[in-house]
Length: 136
Image (cartoon, rainbow, N blue to C red):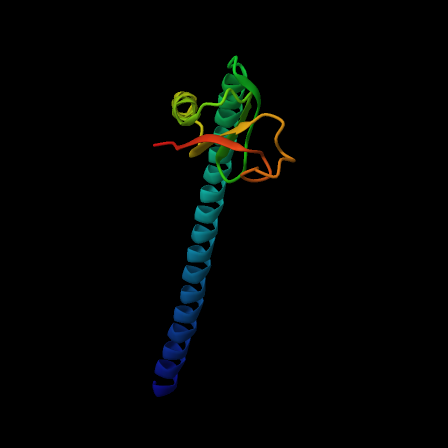
């Protein structure tokens, strides 16, 4: 009788180990599926923001004053315009609103003098800064 009890206890331990392993595998599968779902959502969000940025960029380029425009990966819209000697901070604010209307994820606008990429007075690689705005 003692031998049978030990045998049953041994089987119960093995069953508990197997059951524990199955539970761990199920948790691993569930967490992998959740990560994959989050990744798919992020990819869909990237696609939506890219589409929104493209639409916003097209709207910006359609503006009469704009000679060239680009949205960087850092979320900055650079707009090249002809320099009429005035600050363009107000124009940058207007362009922020245009970005917002098109649901762009760009968060800043920098208006630069068109064709000034090689100027010694340039703000950065995009040219001489005429105006800027942080988009809210």
